[in-house]
Amino acid sequence: MGIRDWPAAERPREKLLSRGAQALSDAELLAIFLRTGVAGKTAVDLARELLAEFGGLRPLLEADRTQFCRGHGLGLAKFVQLQAVLEMGSRHLRAILARGDALRSPEDTAAFLASRLRAEAREVFACLFLDNRHRVIAFETLFQGTIDGATVHPREVVKCALQHNAAALILAHNHPSGVAEPSAADQLITRRLQDALGLVDIRVLDHVIVGDGASYSFAAHGLL
Image (cartoon, rainbow, N blue to C red; front, side):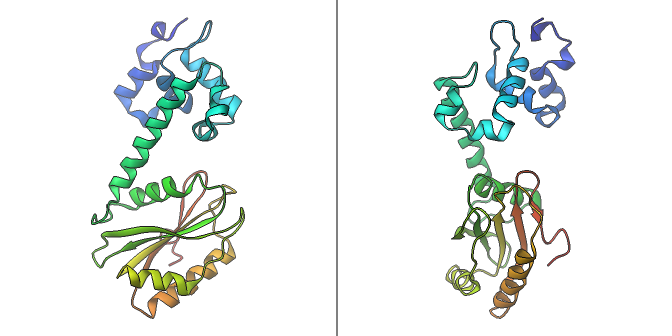
C-alpha cells in the first residue's frame, strides 16, 4: 500500500499542513524530504531504514558526501539538496541573532548557539557579546580544546569583551559527549568569569552548554 492510500491524517505532508512540522516523527520529516520511496517500500519505510542505518537523524544530516550517497535511495542530487536545506536553516538562525538585534527569547538564543556548536567534534568555548540593551554585537569562538575539554582563560574573555565594548555576554560551549549537564569544572570557570567580568562591569547573563539534545542553561537552573 502506498502513502496515497493511507488515511489523510496519517500522510506526512497532510499531517504537517494540519498539525505543523513539530508533530511529525523523524521518519516522517525525512520521508517528505525524500519525496518517493523505492520498489516495494514507501518513502516512510525507506526513511525508517535510513535512520536505522545511519543511527539517527543527526548522523544522517552530518554524513559526508561519500557516506550519504551510500544510503539506499540516496545519491548526489539528494546530498546537494540536503546541504542547501541545512545551509538555509543555518542562515535563518543567524538572521535571528543578527548584529544589532535584541535577544528575542532564550529558545532562539539556545537554537542559535546549538547551530554553531553542536556539530563540533572537539570542545569549543564561545561568547555572544551584547550591548546594554541586550542587542547582539558579535559571536566569537575563543578557545578550542580536545574531545573532553577546552582551557578557558578569563583574561582573554575580558579582553575580547572590552574590545567589543560589550555590556553583557552569554557564555557557551559544547559537550562532544552529547551530555549537556555541567561538570564541576564548568561551574568553577563560570564563577571565575563572572568575577573577572564583574570587575569591569560586564554582566554574564547565561552560560549555555550544547549537547546532543536540549541545551543546558545555567540561568534557567539558577546557577547564575
